[in-house]
Length: 129
Length: 129
Image 1: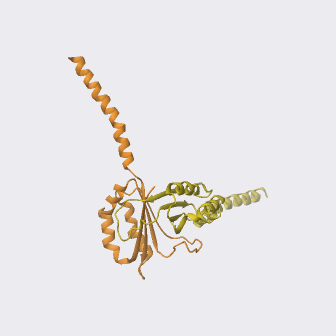
Image 2: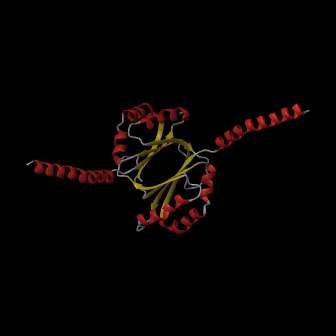
Image 3: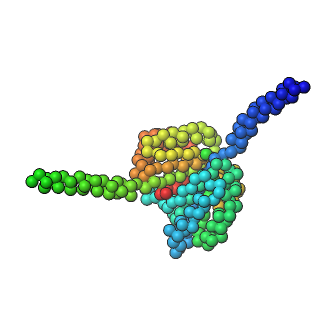
């Protein structure tokens, strides 16, 4: 009886050990890193530095992996290059789910509430990497 | 006489030590990290995977600091989100000069020569971070 219980215990442990990597693999497969790229065209009279200060809080949202904020670079003016926006934000997420959570993060919502009257246009590109 | 020479030597060494950080600071100030963000709209019939393989060589250009390539993420369809492109490239450079050098990097020029017939539109955003 004792050895049978032992055998069943061994089976259970072995089963748990075998299923763990499969579960991890499934989670890895589900998780898809992505970049959320945002460009802001600010209304006339809006102070760019102040806006950058406000937008920098977005990097503190819980699910953001990496955050960069910037302004147009003085690179060559070519037809294909758009230098017309004022502020760019690049956000890295470890998964699409993390980006979805960011959309409803209280800090993000507060930023929109406080600042949405400052931009005339916003453009977003989301892509998995 | 000896002490005067010693004094002058001390001055010279002190001067060199003082000017070194200033020079370094000037170089740091000049160097401005930036992101070069590119979106490709491919012509009908162009294989996205093949194009990604071709474009991945851009990450091997000498002055590229970090390189990411991706495709639109299945995030929520909102008016502000553009999901209409097929391929996105995000390139980090340690300076604007490095990005300028990338524009004429032989690997970059070869990529354009081999692939420019595959896209109907390309859009670029350059911003300092």
